[in-house]
Image 1 (tube, rainbow, N blue to C red):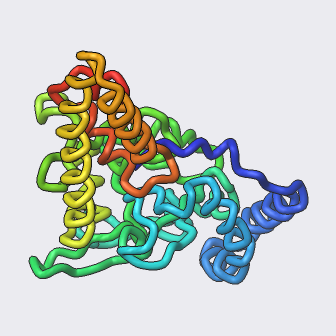
Image 2: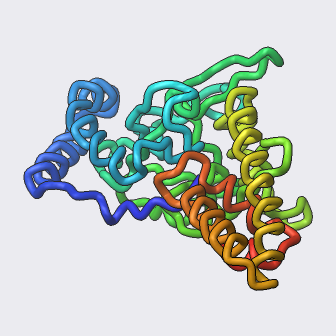
Length: 275
């Protein structure tokens, strides 16, 4: 997960006007008709999909995959129709007033966004799930202040949230914080579980990248030693390795957060300084 600046979305005034009008209509219709109205107008948020893709370089905003997990969807971060309670027991009304609010839209691969039951018989995937910290009051109307909520699901559009995830040598995602750190740790653990960020396919791909990163570091260590001793060949090799490492951590690169974690955790000072 990397930070996505949603303010950089390029949205026409016509789209914003239509979204406002639909939201106003939605507020006037009976509660039992809201979901049907929202679903009938799904074309509105679907029109933003190319722009959402552009903003993340076609990567899922949650797991940073481009195509290994499935096609991408336009996800409502706060579910628009209903919110599933924990353990999928019961549900509450969704954040219907945010259905046409572009700030609530995220680009998600279908594996992150849809329910999947794994070999362990545990169902994962975001779908209508949006758990809050125990004791946190859920917003229930346009008059509610959603900033009073403490979501357990990390949000790529919040600058601090992506930093709560780390990646270890075997390719698995893990919390950046320890269990003693409380809520940041709990949010990371919950996000990894809900989005199934440690399923086999994505872990294998991260591990391949981490192995490549480690090979670059080893080559860089050798080249740096040669460079320090005045070798033109060592200097050229070192500069090429730096360029490749920088490329792996760019926003357009798949699993850039994984590469950055590898470099920042290196014991070599020169690696940490460029990460």
